[in-house]
Structures are given as structure tokens and as C-alpha cells.
Image (tube, rainbow over all chains, first blue to last red; front, side, top):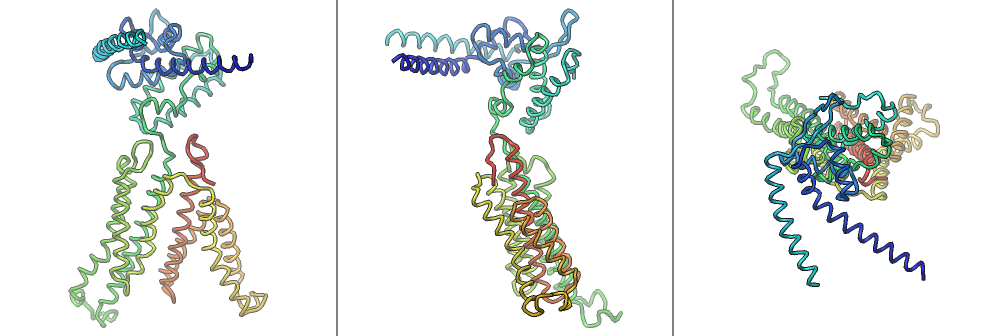
Length: 122
Length: 345
């Protein structure tokens, strides 16, 4: 009987992880743009911030996203040395990225409000 | 470009592991424009160096990265093929063009010989003695080769014409191969009673340039691949067996006593070895078969003896089978070294 509870628990946890992963994946772009809108970040700093907030489980998944955002003109990259330290690769949001962030934020607020309302009804 | 890997704290083994990952990433994104590809490589390199410098073990950092093939997929690029259909189309199309050029030269030569008046060779014949129909006949003789050379040039020279995303074969390149195959087939059929049959090997190679890349795009069956290999081997071994059998019947058990030279026996032995290697799927065996085919075609032209057309065809068939086997075995080895692509037997 105890084995059955363990198995059910494992299935539930697995399902929860899958849902979390797919929800996070869709939202990662919005989160990255929001962090970059505050200030420029270098890659590891950005990855650590997202992991610490529980917004991504894999820091490696950040780089394909950053490459896509750069190709879309939403993010730009530069090498910069701060306080005499070794140069690091910094990411900055562009005006196009800010426009995209504003649009994504609007959509997120509307959608999340509608989802909340739906969940409360059920 | 700044190179952040130059930190003295990193060990040589770490540097090698990082470079191996970046090399795999570069290969996976090979069809991206260079500046975009290098931006991605710089992103990943900077992340790894920063993470390693913060004290994380490099194997752990590398394990946390998106695998190169998944990276490609995340960028919205189509899955990268192994490039075998593209290579096959280029090799076979170029071979068809070379054989077509030789055929055109032979056809033209034969056309001129048959058109020169009886004074030829006596010093009395003049250019204006040639019949007026020769010029148009020359155009007909050369036109299929021009089509074949243009097709090969289009497939091989401009990098972007034949190669699509993920090293695929573009439909336009495939259409060019079709046009060439139809042109060379028409050249064969138009003058079947005359020089038409000389075009047959070039036409076969052109059709192979249409069919083989399509076959390589599909997942191959192990059984089908092995059957094709041993059928190719049979085409090499069958004439050898027939010849040896004929000699044994007519000359007894010792062919050397019948006046057959040691060179003939050496050729037979070499062909048996080539046949077995072809059956086993050896690349060297297929290269040898293609080379033997080309040599036989050259000998047919140089000797111009009896059954010259049969010898020309035999060489053409061997060249065709050698090249097809070669692109097949190349595809097999590429697939076995490219994760996620189906391997042949």
C-alpha cells in the first residue's frame, strides 16, 4: 500500500515538473526582457538570477533564447570590463526589446487575470 | 574578438572540453551566417568561463548547457541532416557532366569522320568540302553535354544554390538534375541506331543524380542496403566468373598453359577482391570499382576495338555502381557519427 502512495506521489511530482517546465518556457522571454530592462547583465549573472527566482531550472536554456532575442533586435551584446576586471559579455535591452516587453507585459496581465478568474470559478 | 578562455586558472583538459563543445556547436550551426554563429559561440564561451571562474566544476557547467542539436532546434532551425543527399547529387552530377563531355567529343569526332569526303588524308580535301549539315549536327552532338556541364556547375559552384538549410538539397537543384537526366536520355533515344547509345552511361549517371539523393533522404532499411551492396558485387563478379569459366572449359585447368598471361590472372584476382570488398560495403572497394570503370571507358575509347560500345557501357556501369556505393558508404559513416540520424547497415 505504501508503494502505491509513493508511486502516485512520483507521478504527481513528475506531472507538476512537466507543467512547470512548459509554463516557464513560455514566460522566460518576458522574464529575461524584464530583468534586462532594470539594468544590463552578463550571461552568468542573468542565468543565476533566473534560477534563484525559480524561473528556469536550466541556465543553459537561456542562451538559445538570448540568441533569438538578439536576432530579433530586442537585445544587444558587448564586451565590457568593469572596475579593471576581466572583460565580460553584457546583454542590454534595445528600444525594440522595450516595445516587445511592454506588449508582452500587457498580454501577460490580461491572460493571467483571465486564468485566475477561470480558476476561481472552477 | 576578445578571447576569455585565456585565464591561466583553467587546466588544459578543461580548455579541451570547452573547445570540443564549442566545435560541436559550430558544426551544428554551420549553415548560420558566420557572424550569428560566432555571437552564439561567444555567448556560451563567456558563460562557461564565468561559471568556471566562480568555482563551479567545468563538467557540471558543460552538462548544464543546452546540447548543440537542441540549441539548433531552440533557434527554430530545421533539423540538420548529414549532407549525404547534397554530396551524392554533386558527385553524381559532376561525373555525368564529365562522361557527357567525353561522349560529346566522341560523337563529334565520329560525325566529322563520317562527313569528310573521300579525299580526306590525301591532302586534296578542303574545309569547304564538308557537307553543310555538319554544323547543325555538331550542335546536336554537343548540346546534351552543355546541359550536363551547366547542371553540374550549378550544383557544385554556387554554394547557396544546391545547399539548403541544414545541408539539405534544395528543390531547385533537384529540378536541375531532372532536366539534365531528361536531356541525356533524349540524346540516347533520338539517335538509337547511330551514336545515341554512346550517351547511355552519361544518362545513367544523370538519373542516379536524381534517384540516389532522394533515397538517401529516407531512413534506409538494413536489408535493402545489404541487398544493393551484394547486387553491385555480383555485377563485378559475374563477368569475372563467366570469363574464368570460359577459359577453364576451353583451356583446361591450367589457364597459363593456354597462353593466358599472368597479367590476365592478376586482373581476375583484383576484380574478385574488388567485388568482395564492394559486397562488404568497403569504401576502398567502391573507389576501386569506380576507378576501374573509368579506366575501362578510357580503354574503350583509346582501343576502339571490337565490341567497343559494350566495353564503353561496361565501364560506365562499373563507374556508376562504384560512385553510388561510395556515396552510400559515405552516408553510412556520416550517419554513424551524427547523433539523431538513421544509420545504414
